[in-house]
Image (cartoon, rainbow, N blue to C red):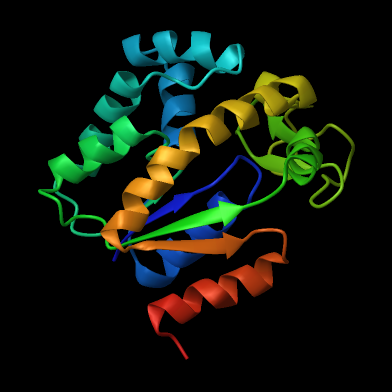
Length: 210
């Protein structure tokens, strides 16, 4: 399988991508995780990307495309989470795979208020990177990681003002991107406001699982 999950931050793409990728035994490739790795190891790409991430701007196409293309390598199957974000990225991916790489694209739809509610409650461990949510997945001890005892903090890109800004940018760029995949006949829309279990069952239906 070669799937792409699109949609705003907080729509549950990552949660569903991990489950489906594990179910099918293919790599789950998240541009967010890749970028944070680059930033954490302070590579040349990571230093450049951090400036945009800290201000709530999307990382430029050329940086993201370079990173993802290197990761894909010669993989036969994959599940891309959050890439492509722009028409230019979609066209680059299409060209790289000779026009027949992506089999299906899912657009996770979620309104802005729900996005802000979901993301502003996220907390990240400074030591091991584990993710929590103050309402949906709290740690046993407030602001302390259950895994390693590290400090939990709110990332700059999880603060309400930054989330709203990111969402507005993503919406402006989503139109041409979705139109591109719709014309290819491989676009499906997912109502991400429903429970994760319901969304998962719908996705499994596209796999043909009983």
